[in-house]
Length: 167
Length: 254
Image (tube, rainbow over all chains, first blue to last red; front, side, top):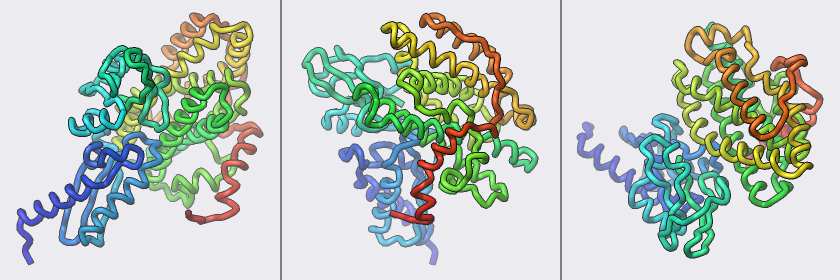
């Protein structure tokens, strides 16, 4: 049987849509696609390959993410699934979609500023308070409840909050 | 990869992976015991980051495909004896007091900051990619530990004394990361890793300037610099704790 290009495209799109429903285990308002860690989806017949890239190299949620990807693809009826982790291109917080940034803010996590590959430019910037929008905030700790979060306090509304660290 | 380069590159990677693992394990001993909650959280996060870096580097070691029956990360971590570890000696010493552990992590962060730019431009692409990943995370470590060392050194008489004592014990041992390793000379020539000797002067001078600005006296380095196969009895203690569950229940899954 000859499979048309459009059919492969449709299948690939269907898999991307399924992955859009796999939540980040630590920030469940974001999907793995929102997070920008799904790098490639390839379908050949009944075989699917998905490449994902870790956010932080020590992230303990990575195995849960891999299982989530596998289950979502299995849910579409595929049985031969390979989920690979790749390091290149390296993940940065610039891979977060605009939609993801809005979701983070609504979740109470200050989204990371875009840096265009120059992380040093944003490391000293104050995190924007996700509650009142003020930039009058202080960083209390570069490390927080997960590897990707830091701890801050808003001096305008007096609310402690977490930020998604720029990477 | 040229097989003549694969073996020394694997040896180099194993040393770096063991550094990350052993220091990560030591720092994790502070989890639940650090002097204040925020530091407990910070140090635990740093330990977890270093464990992630160890995993990346062990993964590179395994990929080099040496005919080594022990080469997966789990095998390397849980089923080698102390003499087979290649970590630098400073990483394995007991945690000491808070100043000792903070200074050690700072020194390690500064050492990584010195090595990583050269590794990021390695001609061995998997190493270059891993180094780029590690470098981004390390920025946060260095910012944190540098601020803490400065604050402890400039704090009370007691915190200053403890930091000075830690520096006297650790400064000579930190030089191990910049000692030339003859087996790695061909890796440098092939553009796979930077030359330790080329990194040493800048690192050394920057650290001397930093510690002096902190009001600490940098001691002379007049002792034997250990090789990577020279360990203290403390590594045996560390491994007996780290490995006991895996060895009691080999192949267990949960």
